Image (tube, rainbow, N blue to C red; front, side, top):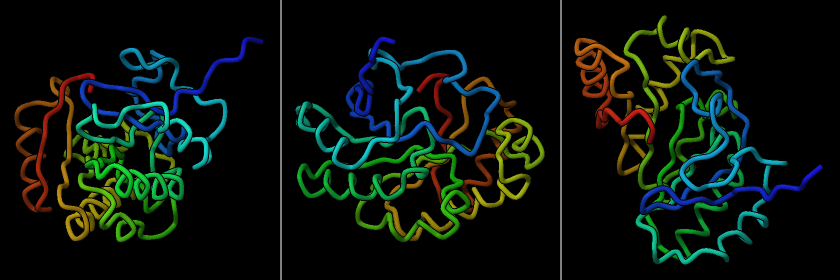
Length: 205
């Protein structure tokens, strides 16, 4: 069997993305990884194993961080599934390079880890981007198919509410063309109540 290199770091536009895990508590009906193996020129984002912090560190040595505006934790899994390595890596990036750090997440990290993880992000993470997907609890469950069941929608909103206390920028996103204008207004209202920014992102981002 041909050995393929693991893609831990990859470029998207002006940012460097960190692919820490393929584990995810959701099985979203629209997930890109159902139809593709890579992003842009990334190489396959399917990992042979979950990388250790030392393996992630070694990869950073191959990139010129001056080129990138932001370091983004986002790959073919939910970044908070690899919380310890995520925190170690974020601390390393902050101390070594002083780069802004973003996490793209489904917002279920507290359920994944069985505890409130948000305070751990303070001082390390500059932006948390949470996939809201829909303003409707029932539709969310049907779309995202989270293993934690119907409590997941409220847990995701609670996560966003907590992030506002510890992280400078909190954004909740939906995907362009997937919602009606009325649903987008409902999402905007939810974000307003939570005190977070609402962003409608392009289909592939």
